Image 1 (cartoon, rainbow, N blue to C red):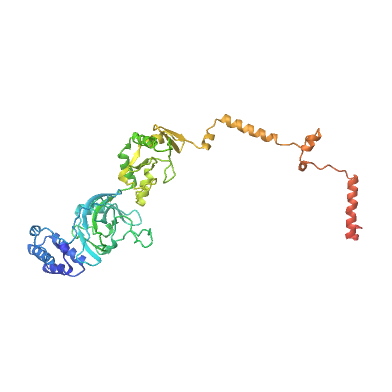
Image 2 (cartoon, one colour; image 1 turned 90 degrees about the vertical axis):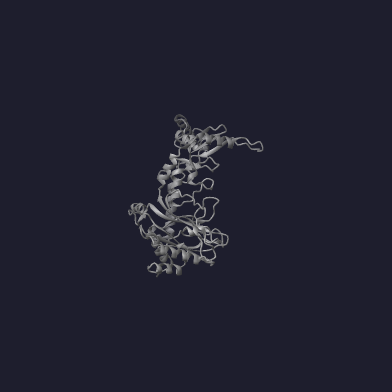
Length: 446
């Protein structure tokens, strides 16, 4: 009832109880809720019911109201709709501080605002305080208070979804919301990623003073939203990997049956598939698989490495299969027993081939096949290649015994004959040189 009162009514209530009635709505609401928690007198309780009935004069007093239970007019959304939020793999829910509640306001304006409050128990305060980690540059908590928003849909668990123009304040301080994703199309409103909001640093770790959450947003026709506050414990990728291992390894017969199903001849098909080639490298890191896994919803045989997949989603949670680009949530992951057997028995190849009967054989490239040849064969090839090269070499120092052999010798390889200083060729050459020098310089010639 107190949560539905307006500012003027909260001021009347606090003044009637002898409390300070100055401040903003969320401050007045905090004081009123603290008044209730401290144990108010019957007269104050009657005043609350009086203000509440004056707040909704159209409604008749119901049996629930006579018993002191909260009541809302029929025009508003249900306070606690049957909405469930998707489980977040990296966070274990310890407590529900505010269960999923409709975002509903008491005005018909496009810009809406409403206020919520929650208090912590001594055990919850202890859980948060003892989880403080100050080893880094900022103070972090492994036990956190999370604020989450989603569509008010009851058909299935909902992922985090933020209302338009959302603004959330905890104890009067604005929350840091996830940044907008890049727009997919021109003219389409920007969307925030589906993530919870960590409000631990804004929460009062007190058992006597409640915490207030003021939410403002822009209403949309045909869409309604809900919000919730949880106490959670953050988990690491190593813990999630250990939990995946503890689920066990899937029986290899499941994958063998899938292979046979894929390779079964289709009578309507003109081309029959007789084998399947699958890589033993992870499509994410291009490294050899260590823990081969895939989602139960995937129809392909190709696996990805569980360790790398979980680590990548710890940094940026998308949970999308790197092979088929379909949703591959953590709870649907399985470790493939057949691929575990293959990886343990086949250490020297990165690709295998499955056959119709479910058996497999390693696939090796031509380079690998050549490297696997016997050493004797390699030496034989080396010696034959070297002999063939020696046949092509011509030694010009050998004497020629026939005209045919002289003709076979290339002109560029012929050597220049030696001349003696008294030979006619040398004498004639010197006379020519002196005649040229004398023509250009008689003095030098003399």
